[in-house]
Length: 479
Image (cartoon, rainbow, N blue to C red):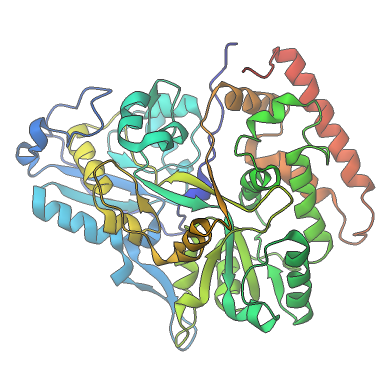
């Protein structure tokens, strides 16, 4: 089966986001010759790890992680937002890197890949290192220097390398951390006020807790529905519903992936039932920061997101409150067991058009070996030979996993079946911006929350479109 490889890899669940703007500055152009493509992942970018020849080189780093450059957003006693520079971990690491290597690092913050795409389209060399969550495979290949082969990645990062952006042979972006993905980020005070000491173990009890929170006049779950991307959590929660991390690719095994009998259809309907029950905010939050504030201030009980959200919400807790009131726990058992998904975290890539590739690689390798920086970023260092530091936010999950109360699912690799399913969804007009979730979720009219006829009609439309393009493309599940 020949794939088009123009399919989006959604890695947003384990990346940090920021609304901050980007900076600017002059770029040096007399850097050493670029490193060869496919160079072994463990190198420092120069022979024997010696970066002395790169001293004086300036690299420009563009990142979505504005909180790590500017510091976490916090509130003062008057409710005003400010940046806590002590938590500008990437800036501190870049300063340390410069002190040790003599390589200068210019940090720039971008809100999304749309700000970088125009530069790459004209082969602009002003970007050396960047983070990008939503490139297609075609764009990764066009804009990114191959970081290492999949085999080399596996030697250093184990099975997690298979879930990094790759085409089956080469890895385009290295992800030096790992994280527990898509669980329950909650305000402990809110659930205690509703009569609960922890996130319940079963769906029935979870729904009862949401009702109790709602009865207290508080929104149970903060969603931020003004955009589609928060619904991406459905893709991982479907794994919990089925007890199988590969459910996305396994849509290919059925002609009716959006029906309630299939994991994806069942999970989307679960979310939509929560909507019908009034568990999500009644008024649309203007942006994701406001949605996070709602949990930090106890106006909402929880979010269903990955670990990257935890430190950001903790940083928004009102002055005088203990940030540890924001905790992270597994989702309930939806019928197949209680699970948490583990995935590689924190994309770092080298621009194909950079004139400073060796220095860029040296910086990324430096990041991969700083376990404390990775922990401060909300992840766990995952490179072979690096002693990991486990962030406190994972303590509840770690204890439950150790006690056998929760099982770990390893994020599924991006294989031919995953790409084939993406291709079918793309041709059906359902993949971009998570339309396969959003169209169904929005089909329920909240003026008539007991009337599911429009929802079921949309299920039929999506199932027919999926079956049509799967047949036209000649795609089937491959063992």
